[in-house]
Length: 75
Image 1: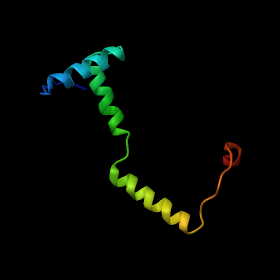
Image 2: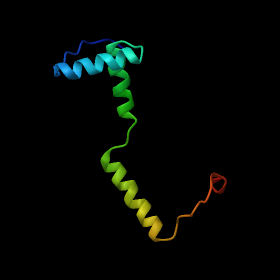
Image 3: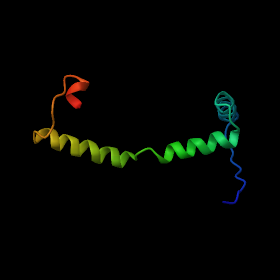
């Protein structure tokens, strides 16, 4: 995969925060941003979350759920 340059404009405080976080993660600024983008891809959307919550409520009302008192009950 080829590389491309991306220039963005952010407030100075945001830049300082991102640079600090990258250093704390022991990675480059580019690496940190790429990691953040990859993590964001793995998140579900607000729409999907709402859809799942509605389905869970429907299952709950239909009695399709169980009350678990311990992790052992889950197994």
